[in-house]
Length: 332
Image 1 (spheres, rainbow, N blue to C red):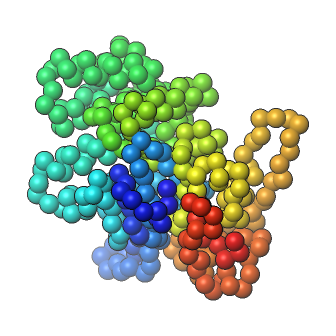
Image 2: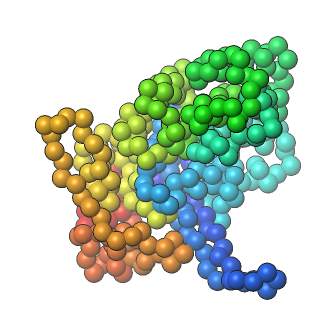
């Protein structure tokens, strides 16, 4: 969903900013010489039981946006509200009960299945850890929950006693999904959750997430390069380029009528499962500009085939050009 809609939302993100300082060389006397503009004034909304897809090239800031929403990377500026509560203020407070409530309700499936699991812990301990931390479960209840989660994500009961290094990348990702689902969160930020899985397992996991969503009114922020899966699982889509949201719309509106030149280029690369149909491929020339020194005006103007003088000098605002279809482009 976009930042212009009104109403009560499960998750509300306003003008989220995340900059990383760049230091000069040296060991003792280092100084800040610039900033990486990873996320720059991103505004998003997600409603209960809905899925927002966040798409864009590598380096566009999608993963950083997800981590900043959860405050795994503390935002430089902006506000995040979950069920009306300011996440930054809750996490800064000394109210352990409220902190655990926020953390339990908002979980993440990490992109890297190799770095996100503790190699010293068994699969059982990895999945049981959030249950022990967030809930008052008996030993029997924890055992039952862990084995049920393993079954849900397509693993066997005997896998519980193994260590992460004994699994393939796809199996490790399923362990990460089981861990995220363990405490029954209200929203999951899924960062490329099926990118390391083969096609058949990918379909199973996507169907699992959609079924869980229907049963539990689970909300998702689905970060992905796979636009086909985005179309399958998402209700709304936000397109990100160099730290900025450039277009948001209902999933069918965006795929059937993309308005921003960058979105048009992304969708032109999606294969069509029909050998008789052909799509004109839009090739973007040049490289993505440096996030340390992003270009003035529209950040996409250096690669846009339709760029005009105004695009180089004035930053476009995200505005509604059709009902619930927002675009940041001077030419639309």
